[in-house]
Length: 105
Image (tube, rainbow, N blue to C red; front, side):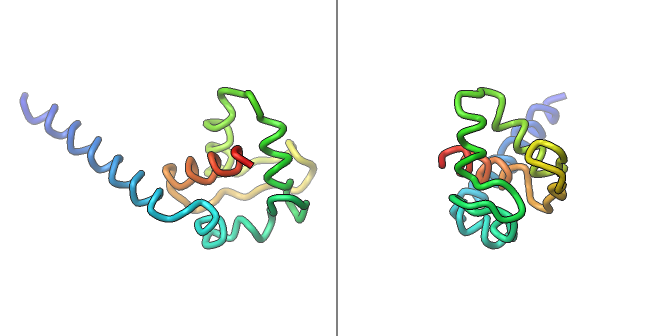
């Protein structure tokens, strides 16, 4: 049963490489590439809320990052009005990178 620890180690390496790949691209570049900026801006409302308002709403909320990552990946409805946010075709590592950036605004 020495194979199981080896497989866990390989899985951890793969996850680490995926996270590094996501970080190789800056969050603003990723937001542009994934069309986030078609609905969101940093300072002004388009379809969705401005990133500065999102950051202000969740400031000091320790669980915000994980909840927002889930919302980015799965979509959501009702937190900022009646227009739903669709699920986004990005990796979990990319979603974490984007959410950390949004919360830093």
